Length: 164
Image 1: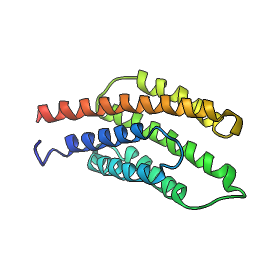
Image 2: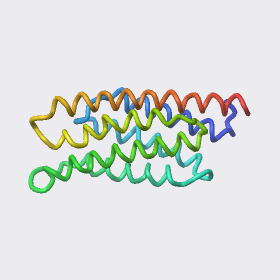
Image 3: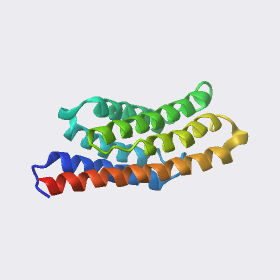
């Protein structure tokens, strides 16, 4: 790969980050791993920020949320706030995926829609202790959708790499 091809490098970093997040596939106790993968993605968003800053801003917001989620807050309002912040973090990830797919010229509308359904189920069910099985299953399905996103970003990387 040409070292000057920032766009290809960005798509590669973002694809690897998405694959890493997908392979975690566990919604709890992975905060530090998610944080490091988000940093990797933010570097990718930064590399293509001249083409649009929206993914970079979403990535920075994810980074801030994940830093809060890594904290040791517990009890009181945090019982409800932490799951809400978790849901916002994941919805920001999906929004960033949509923005990056558009920017990379990957014209697929199926992946964001297919990912939004299990994410919506996860968002609702992970607030209720009795619905943890449904929350876990929907999170795993969302993670599989992240693998689809990773494949699309790696396809964009390959297209840009070959073109230059």
